Image (tube, rainbow, N blue to C red; front, side, top):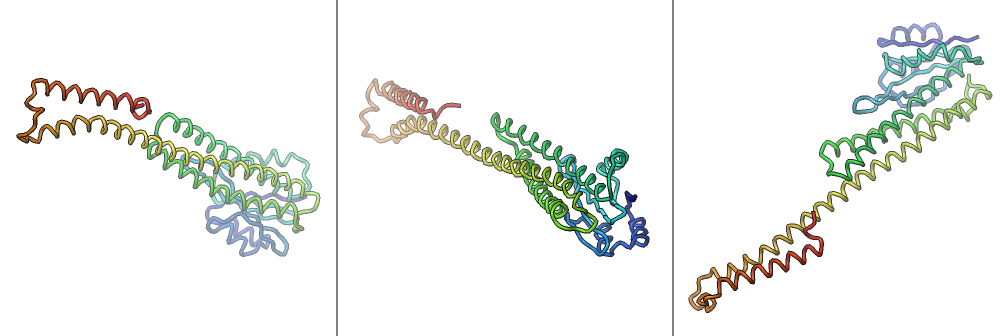
Length: 293
């Protein structure tokens, strides 16, 4: 028989009481009560301390929760410093986990880690869905400043999430492959199952970061294309309007010896030349695609 103790303790009073009763190491208790930690496994004389990172997608960012796990030969203690959605889901799953014919507290640790990792999949999927929506909009219209800022934020969140996955992978790899007190050989395949899920999520996250990077590059290329098109249009119209401007400038210099100004047909001839050259240039630029919308 073994005991599973689940603690939600904002002030740390219950954790301190558990330390006095079960002899938990000071450093492990300090990590469980202090500032957010990286995912890790610490070995002590008669127990193991694990820090796992639960994740969920908030309104605009990924929210992380530290889950401290004390594992001994006869008990498992899970600690959440505050009430979170993961803590709620964990307590909802306690009876489901307890109904299984489990051999020891190490299987509780596996169930907690498995529940944490299962919650990673919706996070990756929701970020991927948002990026795909932005990509579709990218092809139809230029992205706004808010869209670009959101893409950069998603990229930062995805990279941070990838680092978290890497640390969680190291944790499960140690539990699945190393000789660790309180984790018998027959329990290691269960941690390898969690490790396989983490490796799959890590691949998905890497692909997601590549998609975000591609979206940024595509946005930059499309913006350069639009600017190039506008530049060509402006150059084409400048060339067309430059012809009548140049001709009108020549005949507006008011020199006395300008024979063409005395001709009766001069005004109409100059207008005809202007119109002909402008029409020819317009046709030519249209053929080259410089005046296309």
